[in-house]
Length: 124
Image 1 (spheres, rainbow, N blue to C red):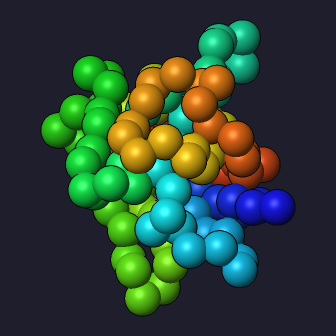
Image 2 (cartoon, rainbow, N blue to C red; image 1 turned 180 degrees about the vertical axis):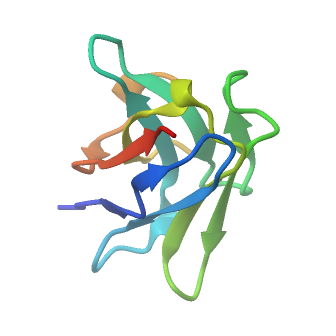
């Protein structure tokens, strides 16, 4: 079974940057569409970005468009979420998830495998 593992979270000041990583030992992540989601306390889980299995197409929510970039490193079998110009409202638990769908979807139900998440705290 695929077990995504996230890393790279931490404490950053507003305006700062972080790069999150998503890996899954023993699985070729190129064969999956990978989504990044976040959930803040008291709020619903929100899809923020995705990179598709089929053509590497990407998706971003309006709240992060222009600031976040999702990418794959094929040799390292890793999916990254580069987060720039971070805002306090970006603070949340960030999780990556894998979907067998060829294309990105914002629907949580299309993602079969989820990581435990990595905490991002944006505070001065």
